[in-house]
Length: 461
Ligand code: PLP
Image (tube, rainbow, N blue to C red):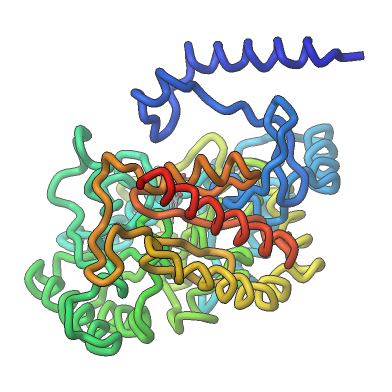
């Protein structure tokens, strides 16, 4: 029998090894030097347990990804079965597997319009890199090699590889890093809460669309390859664009022969109550659609770049100079990962997760909005199971707290002590729980948030 002491020793050793050897993504090295990591050990549905056995509501689904919930036996069984049969074989050139081909067909079924072709990778950044490379390759083959520039948006988050980091428009993330030069150009984020004074939402939408068109013209449409957008910006602040924004952006792209890339890494696979949102919620049929995270509910790294028939037709023409499409990763179409993706889609559909989110999402939003009476809650926004609180020092002027206050981090600590994990990003507290979240979990989350925000206000007095 494992004693409590043995478990504590193991946790302590893990904590020390982690501190000594892991460079954490988005580490805050000063804090890390003081505190090290929390070691998480187990999960079940929307609960997660640290290695000391403390239970938390996982208000962020790991990192916007464990959509089907933690600890699913059926996914574990699928993994074991596929691992025993054939965990991996490459998909280069002419090789494939049953899970890869079946998942490709499933993704084509779920995707809007003519997005019938998929390039597999292992995550969102890689899938976005693929999309940009594909856009360039496509225009090169069409005899339009000048079409290279990419338009992204302030506060966009598209990942962390060299190229995906360049697509990311969150200024603070760019400090100290060199990015791809002169490739990506940014337009304003659809930050409705902080829109210019005196504009209503419809006018703000006009403003953003006009800005995008002016940017395209200034860059020269003949040199612009693509526009990339998350349907709802995630890490940049859960920004829901004004009504009609995406449709009008897409129409502009069509007008100027610019490819529209929808980054659905967070929004697809049920988080907003749809398997894919671009068309169903935002009336856009993108030329490329990027998926990751919820595609496998985080059980295994997997990403996908969906490509339209039109693009596929151009890139798949036989070529003389080099007959090969020289782009590929060892783990593209990984059999085990694709088997998990397939099982995950089956679970999400058969267990009615989209319907569940459609039923409980509005309740979640409504309950969260009850926190608006608190003096430091400036804005509550988002949609369904993708929500966020923006904390402010002054509600009337929307003035924020100074960085030194670390307001969201304080709220995060209070919430964690009360058994809820949320994600602090700048002044924001983000919620993106597993889609298993039910009424009881929503109610508990909102209660904990209220007392955590109040406790934080008390600290600041
Ligand atoms: N795109 C969006 C919208 C994301 O939120 C993320 C990650 O959070 C990425 C891309 C990058 O995905 P990954 O971290 O799997 O590379």
